[in-house]
Image 1 (cartoon, rainbow, N blue to C red):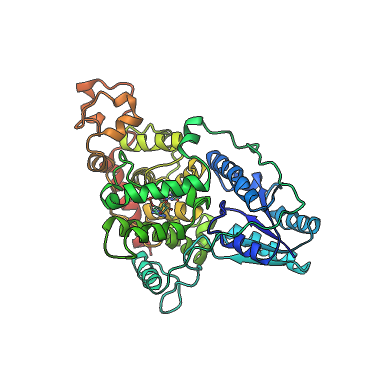
Image 2 (cartoon, rainbow, N blue to C red):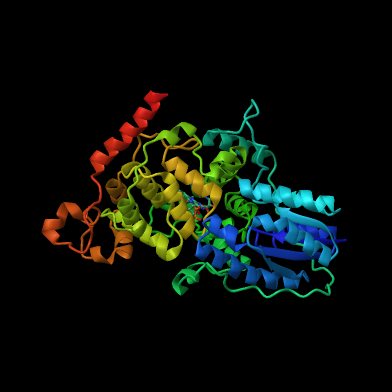
Length: 475
Ligand code: FAD
């Protein structure tokens, strides 16, 4: 009764629902499919692909300890996946295929096509709920719809978690060795250039490392999380997003760690812990939104009327934003952090997203794509949710008239300019008063190598408000 665990974004052996189920059902082989064409079509960042491969290398060793061989196959895209799987099942006389569910439209289509073909051939295919605490579609309003308001969704999640916490699945015991050897894990895939050693060193691979990062975060930073999480110069957040997105650590492991620290309290007790649990539930919310409103994973706005906004075609301004040359230090520092580290602080993701979609009035999809192409934690649900929140086109998004001013955000969240100095060496010499808005002090300090602001904040704010107001009047 040979089984396959088809690995995707669940690159770990501990608390891996599908792996545990496969191994309980019979002798198991693991499969990972390399699909470069699909990854390019999905704008997966080279640093993320490299992170997957590095984690796969670590996982291969973990699987070896369980006597589970890891097979690797390459096909161009997901269209080719059903037949690739069938071929492999025939080659190894497989009776069952297990995977952990993914919730994008293309992922769902791929999985349905696999299930249809394999079941016709007598092979049992089973999807497992693993990426989320609750199966999408199971947290619903009283009238049976999907929640559109986060606070209501959260309330229901908390009351369900109060009654029963999803447990971590016990780690499987090693199986008897199989006469199948593992494939070597490739170190690169054509089309995805290798990231810098600096970037790679920031994100070590492997579940042992992810568990250590979680443990250290809980021990050293969780208590202060609510106070430090908005300060980009401080290491106040967990930096676990890349590990969660690739499934190197599970959402249940994170939740249980926070609860362990907070004596089992979900919504009271330590404020740092409850604030962090709240962020884990934002992650959950956006995955449920993706599942309940498939249009958002097809490049469409959640609020379809916002598709009529007069987005500007402004290639020069878009490029200035992408390359960190807008003349607004907080925007430029954040965009350089993204390019160099593959990650950006959450506060700054909101600030740069709002600047692009409101002050520059450039379509949020441009920003979503740029983020996806550079983020090591790029995740369709969270990225789309974050962009649509910032652009006021999404579910429970920021009201359109609440625009962040990048200069006051900078003064408030990086008061000493420490983060700005780290990423903008050309502004090193400015003091903490002037560094947030060098243009205002240009004549005084002669900052010539730093660009002038590409947009007037007041006029561009008014332009964005007009655009949104006209939209509501037209309805
Ligand atoms: P922590 O503060 O330690 O939070 C713990 C975990 O909770 C994170 O690792 C993440 O999995 C989850 N989380 C936290 N905040 C959010 C949130 N607002 N929405 C959804 N999940 C959240 N997150 C991604 O994982 N991938 C993305 O592609 C992504 N794109 C974003 C784009 C925009 C425009 C915005 C505003 C936010 C985006 N986020 C994304 C959410 C958030 O910025 C990151 O999850 C967070 O910065 C990761 O850092 P951390 O692991 O230190 O987070």
